[in-house]
Image (tube, rainbow, N blue to C red):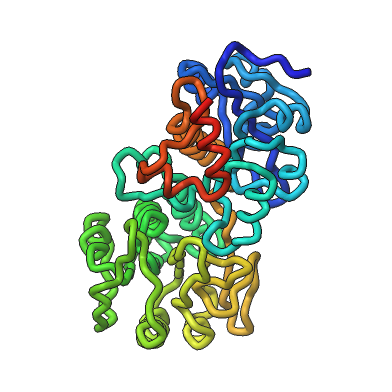
Length: 381
């Protein structure tokens, strides 16, 4: 039997690390933070090791370290980097809150499974970003920022020359020319990092507001001669373009991309198939030795036509890196940010010493995608 510290809500986190994941949804600092709010924490043994957090550090902060099954059995709420698999759902007791990126936009069957198991599903991907009260809960923003930074580092590592201009006794080496497609959180971080590394950076995004943001970082805005004045969707995310808009954008980007050494694509549409920004023709137009990092690569496709998760080199000598797991490559910082996001979502629902949803509150209604009845029952107790 797991013994937890005196608290009204028990929050559990499991080990999600593997070949592509090194992050953890709870850090020792957050254990201390939640403890001040009357929430006790349980964590599976070794869950934070890949992010450089030891079991001893969690215990020192006040958490209980236990086995996987013990954490699942004792927790009132479970927090995740991604989402739990069917085996975890089967073990979780009815009424347990499941907090994470649940894929609710594209996987109705998963949400239905939560509902049938009597679990309360809290989908962070549905966070209404425009609410000031939600900013500290925005996992997508925090992790995309880490992703954009790492994308620039990965591109620089794969590129077989210097990024900055170098003047030496043997001659002058020109700076690398980098193109960032998608100037959201990830794109802006990629721009800033590439600039600091010395590259000459150009960027493009369909959102009109992005031009000023790009230029404020010292980069040029790529003029495609197109007008997508309604390019911004709800919540600050880029909307999906129409078929005609995509075709026009692709043709223009393909033509312009040929002059760049590095291309980083970051245009994700949350929970949906990402738009193709660089076609096969565009890739074929790149010079030998060019590097493309596709942050949107996944089972749903990517921003680069034909990109897959992993690294491939075309017959023309272009390296394409499909990299959806970049944030995991900066596991300590990414975990610090993600743990704060998840903890603040949890804390939002702790009311009068219980986990409960407030019916009619915008944030609650947006995030709770399964188990509303269970949430309401908890609120009444």
